[in-house]
Amino acid sequence: MKHQKKILLALSLFLSSAAFNIASSADLTRQQVEQLLKQASSDKPADLRRKDLKGVDLSHMDLRKADLWGADLRGANLSKSNLSGLVLDLTVMTGVNLSGADLTKVSIFGVSMMHSDLSNTNFSDSRVIANLDNSNMSNANLSNVRWGADMKNQPMGLMRVNLNKVNLTNANLQNADLGRASMRFTNLTNANLTNANLLSAELTSANFTKANLSKVDFTSAKLREANFSNANLSGAVFTSSQGQDSTRGLNNNKTKNAAKFD
Image (cartoon, rainbow, N blue to C red; front, side, top):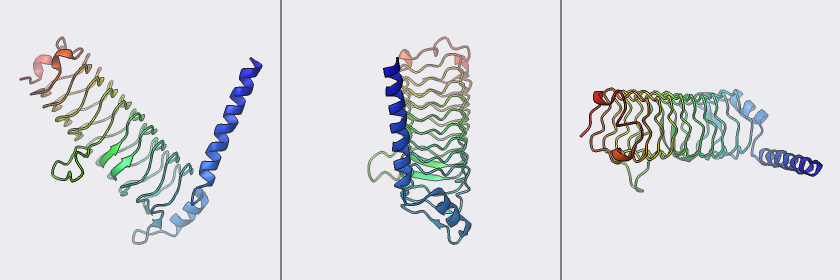
C-alpha cells in the first residue's frame, strides 16, 4: 500500500511539473495578455495571432478584442471566457477547457478540438468545421449553428464537423445545421434537436434516447445501430436513411407514426 502511495505521489508531482512547464514555455503569461487587452480596441485588437498560449489560464477573460487567429491554445483554460464573434480559424485547441465560455457567432475552421471540455459552452449562431471527437459537450448550446458541410466549397475534399464519441447529453441543438456531420457513437441522450438538419449525417451507434427529434431531417443519414428509445419522432423525416433495420427503439417507438419514412 505504501509503495502504491509513493507511485501515485510521484505521478501527481510529474503531472503538475509537466503542466507548469507547458504554461511557462508559452509566449505570454496571463498578466501579459491582460495588459494587451487593456490597450486593445475594436480597430486595433490585442495581437495574439499565432502566439503560443499552451496551458495558459485565460479563464473568465473578455477576449472579444483579441486576434487569436492561428494561436496555439492546447491545454489552455478558457472556461467562462468571452470569445463571442471571434475568428478562430486555424487555431490549435486540442484538450482546451472552454466550459461555460461564450462562443456565440464565432468562426472555427480547420481546427482540432479533440478531447476538450466544452460543457455548458454557448456555440449558438456559430460556424464550425472542426474535429471535436471525444469532447464533453454536455448541456452545450448549439442552437442555430451552421456546422454543416458546405458542398460548394470543398477544394480539399469533404470538410465537415466531426463529433464522434462526443457527449451531447442535455444539449440544445434546435435548428442546428449538422448536414453530413460525422457523429458515430455520439451521446445525445435527452438532447433537444427540434428542426435540426442531419441530412446525410454519419450516425452509426448514436444514442438518441429520450431526445426531442421533432421535425429533424434524417434524409439519407446512416443510422446503423442508432438508439431511438423513447425519443420524440413527431414530424421527423427518415426518407432514404440507411440502416433502419438495425436501429434500437425505432420500430416500437410510440411516436413513429408521426414521422415520415420511405
